[in-house]
Amino acid sequence: ATAKLIRLLRIPVVAARFEGGYFTHPRWSPRMRRGILRVRLELGFSAEQLSRMPTGEVVERLERLIEHNEYEAAPRTTYGSRAPARGIERVLFACARCGAIGAIRSARHTARCDVCGLTVQCTGDGQLLPLAEGGNVPPTPRSILEWNHTQHEMLRCLIEEAVAERRAEPLFSDGPLRFMIGRKSDPLVTLGYGRLICYGDCLEFRGFRFRPQRPGRRYPRAPIRNADGSWSLVFSLSELEGTNVQNRERLEWYADSVLYHVRDPYERTSALKWLSAVNLLRRAGAASGR
Image 1 (cartoon, rainbow, N blue to C red):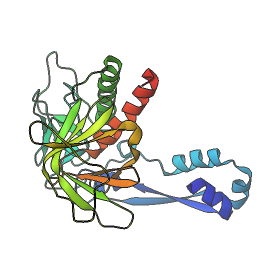
Image 2: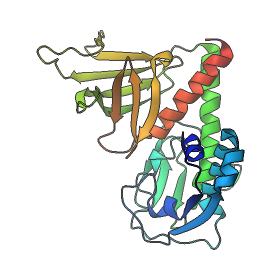
Image 3: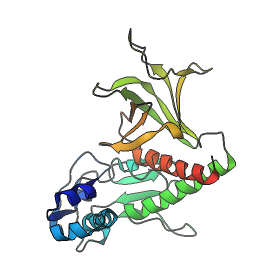
Image 4: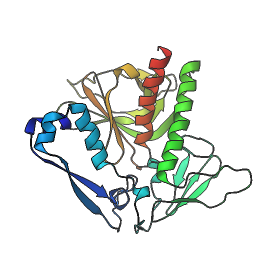
């Protein structure tokens, strides 16, 4: 859409690339940090160039103009924070050593896996330094970028195996989470609290606290009552539309023209994990013919 718009305007386009933004306001923390933030302006297109370039080429050039890797920047800058690792499990959703999903727990300066005990220290320049490593233990990623590549590959392998074997058990889950819905311009309404569960072919929200329906107003889909007294809302992958992550790691999707919104009251759950999982499940399902 952006490429089509600037082609229609036929005016010079200047691209602004932010350097230092990832660490001055990191994705996993609600607090900004002291450090250097640079904004580099560069002429991306002239009006004459836009008139000759196809939309696909405009998109590719725009992506190159704004792309920036903080870890390749020189010189490296230290960004001050009293708790640089706090909340980093919102980004590091899998252990880079044992592959456990959702097992990372952060403290002020460190992040630790509850399964294998891997502990890393987060430095002011975004490095992840293991506090104990040696012997036959494989080296761990030293940056968030490397860790993300590793965990994404682990998640891909887990999902592809589960889909190929048609596993019925859950792949992973998170909770307690707050589950909300919204329609058009109406404010979000809380349905209840519970766990979000990922299967090989669907997502399930299961909770014990469910807000009763208001008189004259019905929910878009009725919850399923379980034998243990809990209730469930199940969404097949084909029903999910517009899956995305909003500010402060809040997961959203549309189903039957209704907005479904999931948030963690403690702001520890990784919405990135769920978005990645949905995309990988769709690819694996398409490859297997499901």
